[in-house]
Image (cartoon, rainbow, N blue to C red):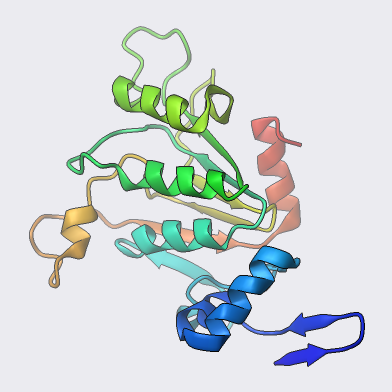
Amino acid sequence: AVSRAKQQFIVVGNQQRLLAAGKSLKKMAEVCSASFFVSMEHQSPTYASVNANGVKHYFDCDHISAFDTLLSASQRSFTVVVPWIRQGINRNHPPLKLLRTAQERGIKVTVYYGYDGLGQKNADDGDAGLIIAYQRELGAESVVRLPEGTHEKILLVDDQVATVGSWNWLSHSYYQYCATATHRSLALRRETSVELRDPALISALKQRLGQA
């Protein structure tokens, strides 16, 4: 629905579906994103899969497109909390490119990482070379080593959406596997994440990260 008044231009609809529709609807969504405030509070990145009771979840390979969709939908900030940053079998490491692209369009991107306590002997943070690449591409201030370590896997989008679950956002090796039609080329452990829109929880998570 579109409403135009003398001092206002209001579009009510799902941003991702408008973008996917193409032609004039896509153009309108792009212009609104670039020039106006877009409220994502009641938006879902994959609208068609939203449960009737409002619960949003991701299973297994859903996480790959969810990362891209949530990051593309972000308007102000995007935070990733993970134990590890690892290359996996895909040498291009798509998340870094996506995060860099978001940063270039003005999104405040922050990555928190580290599994073991800082200074612990043989601490496992992931691939040292890739971590350096993250620091180089995103800026050292945007790639933060958690001194106490973490096993959390969290995405925070615009202080409005928190995605919490078991998926290793920056260290999985399933790009090639999930691109196959049958998903049978190798074993994929069961992975689940839940998308939450709870201001109190998001505030608490930010405080744990020192962002509040």
